[in-house]
Image (cartoon, rainbow, N blue to C red; front, side):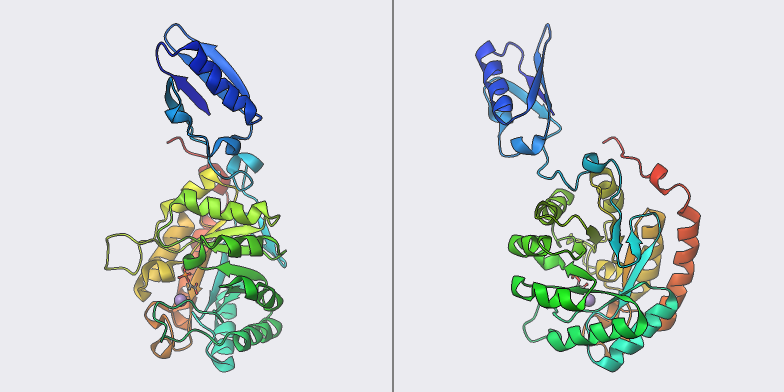
Length: 346
Ligand code: PEP
Ligand code: MN
């Protein structure tokens, strides 16, 4: 961080800024120029996150505004922190696919989905047992019975299970039946829930809030990391914009942005990101080409009869077709991924 003082700033003003920097436990490096004084700040800048240096007397501007996250920052590790889920690695340059129905509806529907996504090449079965729905009258999931079905599907197919936890009181229960906890878009800033999953030893899939900036998203991840759980994977699932043709606007630039700023792997969910079945494959291919560490795809044995998100769900044949092309693009990019994702200057 660099603090640029105004031309002719008083010595007392410079001393006051230096004092604040030192009080925060950081080291100021003062350069007195002919025209202006510049103060470089070395150390953990998160300690200055709440200090409004820019309004201090004599301060002209503050460059590289302190970010509120540290453990999830790129600087902290110098590269992507790959996340292990069972024997599967997310963030090592491969493409990990999580697929399955929006919601667990019955054992039969879940098993048909599970075998279909396994056959297509997915490593994870997804499916909600607790569903956050806009209308209180919509199907909200089978809850504990749905979790038990997921456990059973995991046992039978060997797929890993990722499923959403919506509240603090269900964290232990969802941990018992899953390999990875999903924090949904509506809960991205539920700080009590973030802290609760941060105290578990389960990897966490943190979906981007539907109106969250990248900075807010990474700060949400930091809440989890700050509690001790560093096994976090981001999931871009589209954000709310003025566009209404698609359900959300899928922000593929978030892949490069988060890889520039953070050490977290990122997967992309084009199902919720677009809400439209025929957009799921093209956006999946684009996400993989742009460097995503994986995909989350909604697949239903019979999308027409799905209890939720049928219009964006692929049937098993469509999923197979998507996977064939995803595999080709994944192979193409494998070699030089890290090289191409070097942090970019802004
Ligand atoms: C989901 O993946 O089941 C889901 C509800 O997604 P989101 O939180 O992104 O809406
Ligand atoms: Mn869904």
